[in-house]
Length: 143
Image (tube, rainbow, N blue to C red; front, side):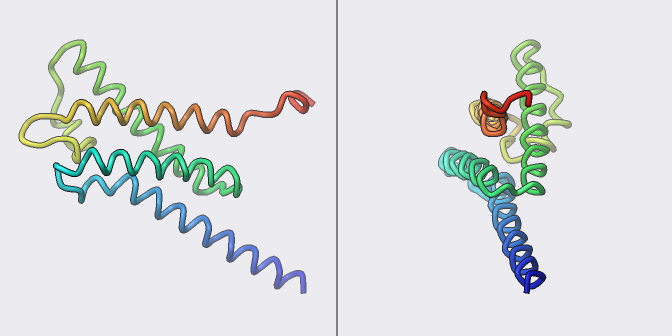
């Protein structure tokens, strides 16, 4: 009886991981399919989705999806940071590298700078949010 119960919990856990994983992939890679005029709206929508996904992952204890989200957040945070440093300091950007990495935000030989700054701010906020959600409580800290 308990084996069946464990199997049912495992299926439910897998489905929760799968659903939130698809939601994250939609929020991150959906930029490839959104027209230029609707890019800001989709950026706002995907920001809300990623914040909700981060909180949901913590509440449900979804480890696999948490690690995938951390990898994506870190990757885009580093890419956008390097881009901004290179853009604002030297005004000369190696377009071939960033053209591939930031493809949805590059068109007609120019980058959409406000959206790249938004990526950096959002990923930084999501990292801080994950740290705050996973921070141990003061009472049990160090025991």
